[in-house]
Length: 350
Image (cartoon, rainbow, N blue to C red; front, side, top):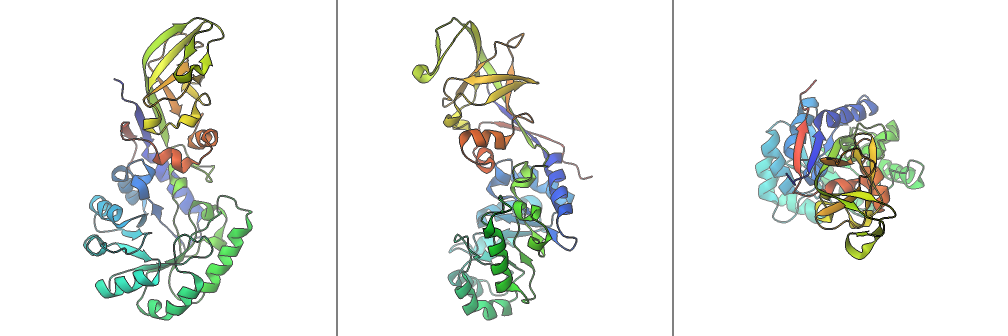
């Protein structure tokens, strides 16, 4: 079988949520950000185990994700939409009982006119300049918006993966200036904010990447293992080359394994020649270029040709690969393509 397998540990995801929940202030609700199909790992599988673990608030990026998640989770949890109430979203918001986080006056006007009385939240921009009402905009409509009874007022930290960055304290102060005394539940922290302490927790935290085993939650349990099958092995003589562009030349007799996966599956071409692949505890270097569907790996040190090798595993997690690629663990996860067979373990509430 040439299809690679992405193994996903649902118990690790729930353990990571519980750990971040325990790190949040006692009076704080801990939500779960499950956008982008649970960061590429499958909302249909991840959502129910988080619900069983105690999550009652979920966050998605767009209304279509929220409507799909509602079908999976049923009527009980609250599902918030970061992008707010866009034109054309009313049917999904109403039908799935979603809570749009209104980002501007236009969205607020649209929501109050089309869905009067329907639950909503407000997102404020405290300096990231991405989504949310800016302070002057908020000042102009705060009385009206608060009179309509928002269920949550939130903002988002730009530099929470760098705890000592001055932007964190700056945004915290702006958020307090805009929201102290409003009498509405507030939220500022995602994973990084949870780890920075209770000053950032307010009434709700919204961890995302930490649930899935990524930085900045260094204590997270690993969630994924990516196993790639070997299609063929061959013996090389000194001076023979491997892959496109002849970028690797065998310095001595070698055994090369060709694996079924490539940049079409989210293994970025820039990783060419950098990571190891693992056979148990044995590390085997990737040689030659990453191509669309294939990798070539030096397995000379193994006593027998392997049937499969692991690219993502406890010895080499998503962030280690991200560092090699010059990106972040979020991208490594969400880039994992549809050709992988996704196999789930665990998932029972404890």
